[in-house]
Image (cartoon, helix red, strand yellow):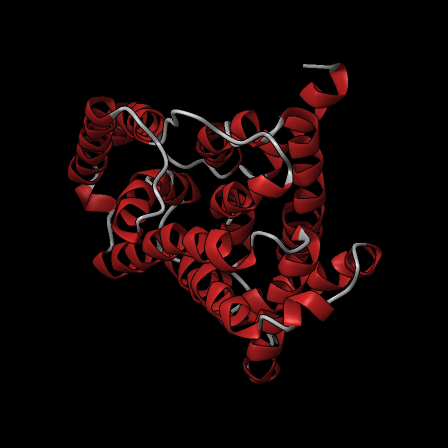
Length: 304
């Protein structure tokens, strides 16, 4: 890879590993629904110039039904539940549990008949390792687990696994940035009434800057950089960042928030990571940027 490619790759590894930390800080002052509004509204507005440069919302809005389905399953519901779960779960544990998305994604793709990967035995080994990793992570750290938050994350993981199927089947031929911008702005409009009623009476500087960084850097800028990375190195190598992001989330949570590095994390995370890599391995991968839209949706699930 070129120096530019490495720079883009390194930037995405960090940018989409940071959101769990920022959400954990922001929910100290912002109600989950208000946080979703602030993030999507600001992120969508920042993307508007890039959206119009790519042709605007016309083609996207003509497919409003799959766009709405994708928005609800990928953004509106998961980001609310994720924010609510991080009120009681550490950012590092949340990031590691979300790392199981590729495991569920393989199952969903197979059920939907859209799975084009090979390697049957290796995949089943990966699924088994990943599930064992999740069980170890939760089993060894059971005292730190809140059942309601765990159920919320389970819904998030399923949503993140299903949304790329909708993207690949109904929206993959559309310009990527307008699809993302439209989804963000639709979500913001849906949460606007809630945000008006639940806007915090006082906001700390840490929470305010966390929201700004979450919206501008980890949402709007992240998509611009990610699609530039795809154009540079193709989707097959670009999505490798999804295996680095949880490690970044873990490192930041431990170093900046003082979150514990538990035995469950030490044993369970390597198993989840290895299982995800094996289960999601492809026999052949397309190399064009347009073919990468499903991968973009899948990778974005680790940015929350």
